[in-house]
Length: 108
Image (cartoon, helix red, strand yellow):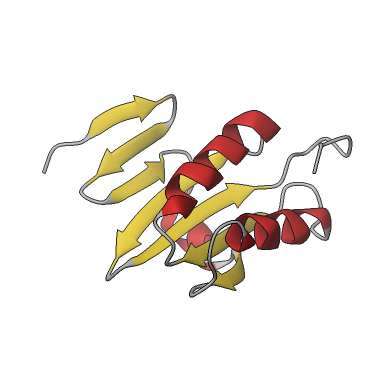
């Protein structure tokens, strides 16, 4: 299987984007946010709420079923500076892993 580098440190393999610097066991330790079944913009609002309540550096995983969340969460990560580390799509469920900013002055 080949991979395509799309962003620095972010690689796409099949329907998965991976941050090459994290070990596989780290993904399992993420704080989970279940936004499946919620329409836009509710998944984004749920993520922002979780980021506000998380310690800096916390790994978060949000699961959504709204296709618009792909665009919304990628844009949010880019604009807010929250690192988007991994994206998966499996059986109609989108999973996004982000790490809360280490700076306590993050705009959320």
